[in-house]
Length: 113
Length: 111
Image 1 (cartoon, each protein chain N blue to C red):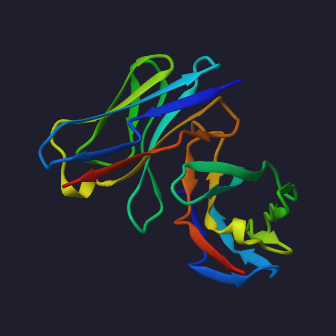
Image 2 (cartoon, rainbow over the protein chains, first blue to last red):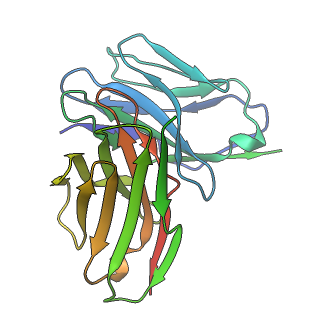
């Protein structure tokens, strides 16, 4: 079945460091790909998405490119801030299957000043 | 604009007691509705999804059930809670081929 694999956390960085959180997927058909963020004590918020190969989603300085050849959707940010500390979830949605989201296990990011 | 409301926000229940978490969506019609659970230290697990009134699909066998009595209302229930039911429960909605939006979640602690 469809699945999403994320790198293990926590990821610990100093402020202004470069961030990469790896995400790879397995899916039949042509899924849409998402990154969601969960700040402490809150629900999930959509961070960015890409709906087809080579699309780049971006928001709040974060970027991810839909790579069909490597089945990846890695999240990057050039300079992280303390306020970026959160859990990040990679997910896929296959439009041919009721648009259910399948999530990775999440990666906790901790940014220190 | 569309909004999603989920309640209660926190809940502490004894083992063996019943559970009812409610979710309503405003500003859209015929949404897909979902219940997810996030157990401590683990990722998100899809529990139930619904494409219409009275239509419920269960993703995993468990102690919980879901109902959709109205188009924009989704209820998560249990007759007898287990310790393993503790976690963070998230209701979500989507319109076909669009993004899924989440409520703020409900923290359930079974003691």
